[in-house]
Image (cartoon, rainbow, N blue to C red; front, top):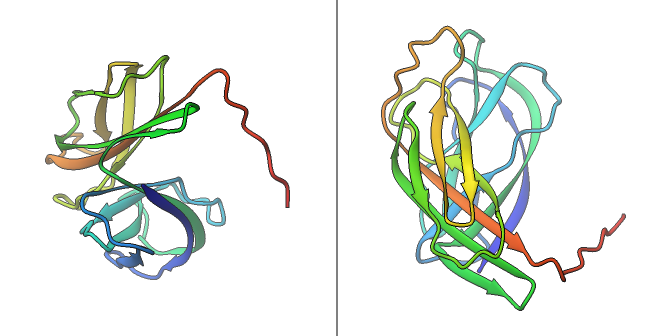
Length: 182
């Protein structure tokens, strides 16, 4: 249903896009990247674009008042085929997209039968405006959540609509998750 990976990159210039190729081909991939490591302390976020069946592009976006270049960072990513996936009896995953999100809250509906409140992660996956944005979530429940984009303080806070990918996951209370060291 998906794959995960870790990339190491340096942002040498503003508008420098990096490509990640998938191990396999997807019909409708949903991509979410985690926060970058903390090698450089400048405030930043990750922007994804051009999600295709076999790859996607990303860049590190420093807030607009900075120079846009950044030292080497590590960041994880997850790719899941769009839809609902049941992992045995222990976990439910739903992956989807909201096509138009800006600085206003937008509601997203979950179709999976989550038994409790799922964990939801989201990622801006378009670059319709150059201003860096962070994806914000609220009102998460078993039936849905709300999402918006947030620009840095001091900006006009009026952002053009962007596409957002999201992944929701719920683990049953009977599931045991083991920590693997090393």
